[in-house]
Image (cartoon, rainbow, N blue to C red; front, top):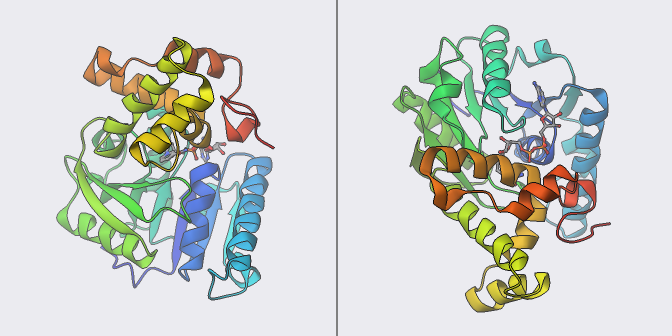
Length: 285
Ligand SMILES: NC(=O)c1ccc[n+]([C@@H]2O[C@H](COP(=O)([O-])OP(=O)(O)OC[C@H]3O[C@@H](n4cnc5c(N)ncnc54)[C@H](O)[C@@H]3O)[C@@H](O)[C@H]2O)c1
């Protein structure tokens, strides 16, 4: 098993909202990073996201290095074999168990046997993902929060077969990235999404059922409970498709109190996914 301090290269699979954020914080912490997505277009979009985030952080004086120096440590690719030298790989592809299991089977083949394989899943079973490999002891959940460069916490999720040394690695690696951690057993939604997802769905229902306007649902929760974002703003920020996938898993595993809101399903069916498509509950530039 690797120690985070021995790791030189971090692999990231998926260059979307979370993947490119994870690549950015790993490079900022000094690691070389290989970020892989399925199409060049998605890789390029992820790299552009990193460029603009690094520029913003530099303007605020939040970086110890020039953005270009950090950026030079990140290689974007569509080639899975480019992850061969990674000491740890964090998977952040879409929230679909079969897609994630396929990715882990591939990672098991291409990476060194000492490499730790982590999943950023929001709600899926780490144990089911790990069982697609021959190294379930070295598979762990590393659940980063969005936006990754800003949020301080990472949830470490312990699967049925995750070895204690892998859990220790996960905490230490997150600390190397400047994050604080907490630990959750491999139960649907872990700590955060088990509680957050029904909160978001209830906010969508309150809006849909005319309890208050969109803005007042969010304003009410911001001003009334001191959260930084109301449920509808937060849903746009996360991605309505991601919220719906998480809701469906929780509903399936935990019953009716986790049923996805009707309006959430309608927005996703219309392709209005929030910030990433420019329209969700709000319009975004
Ligand atoms: N968005 C959030 O707020 C948030 C927070 C925590 C965790 N997560 C979890 O992180 C994961 C990614 O979510 P996201 O919001 O970044 O989604 P996203 O849709 O922004 O990005 C997913 C990316 O994965 C890529 N992809 C799909 N199959 C792939 C494959 N086989 N190999 C490589 N890339 C592949 C897609 O092309 C896309 O670019 C999900 O499991 C999600 O539940 C999301």
